[in-house]
Image (cartoon, rainbow, N blue to C red; front, side, top):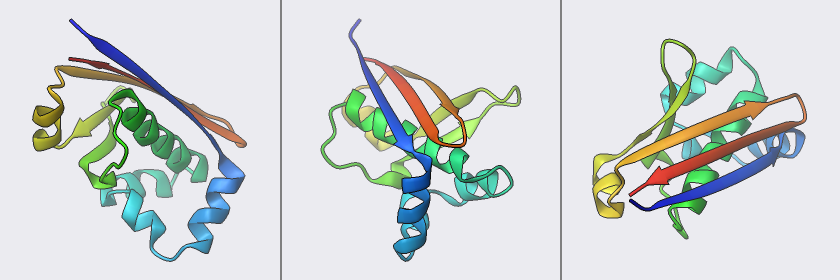
Length: 116
């Protein structure tokens, strides 16, 4: 069994500026579900989801990621998980993915472990 790990950290203030400055960037990066989930919770939650997508791309060594192919969702318990498009999952031969995300007002971080 092989595995790989990716990690990413995001400056929340810089991320917020980039989102506000670039038209439709939020819709290019995030699914409707992610946007709606974070709308009530603050920009640091969107930043942590961006960090999770970046950490996933690093873990699987993807140079270019179609942002909507990977979606951060939450279990009823609140625990996050990655919902990965089946086509991408099969192409990369992914058996399972675990993530951990965290944020404070200034920083958002995510770690992704992929099992092949």
